[in-house]
Amino acid sequence: MKNSIVLATAVASILTSGVAAAELTANASITSNYIWRGITQTADQAAGQGGIDWGHDSGLYVGTWVSNVAFGADNSGNGYEMDVYAGFGGEVGGLGYDLGVASYQYPITPEFNFTEAYISGTMSIVTLGLWYTVDAASGNDGGVFDQGDMYVSGSLDFAAGKSDVSLYAGSYMFTNDGEPGVGEVDYVNYGASIGKDGFAFAVDKNDIDDGSTISNVRFTASYTMDFEL
Picture 1: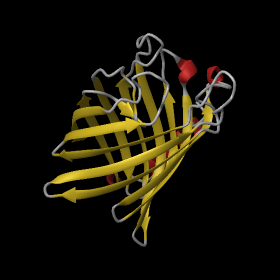
Picture 2 (picture 1 turned 90 degrees about the horizontal axis):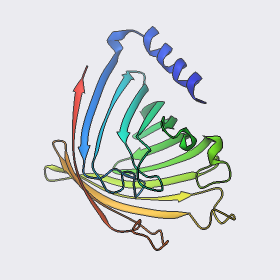
Picture 3 (picture 1 turned 45 degrees about the vertical axis):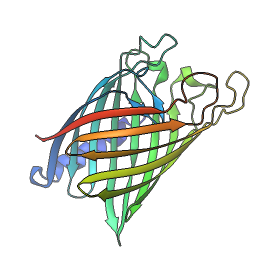
């Protein structure tokens, strides 16, 4: 894993800074469909998900997150996705920021593995983010997911009565877009969600035009619980 040194350094910094200044939390959720960047990762089936995060008062954090997936040629055989990430977040003059590295691992199909560096900023209700693929498994060379891919996103997040509302959009730009054997794969996705007390309802759409159902409007309901450990 390319980011193992980053993660090891982050963990070491947290442990040497004192347990009293750190917090360990966990989350668990169930969702009717796992949508990632506007595309279903579970062939429109339900998913069980969960993760553990360690955050330090300095802004340093590390974590891991797991979900079942099914996106192969026959919508099976991919088993699960395991993400491992580390980063640093804070606020300066009303501007919130977050930067780090995330590695997406698929233990049953490691040829899909890839790693991204990311940075995002939040001012008031507006958040902008950029993810850049710094490493992809050898099975991705020359394919759709490869080193140099970029995803940019923006969202408006605000309270509406007792609920939390998010309006969001993103653009995925692939380094091999238009190449022989890959085709035109760049796309835009957008959606909205409303949530309260762990419950959330979302609607998502993308502009992929390949004759399949991948661009259909998708509605998702989910429930998430957070725990302190």
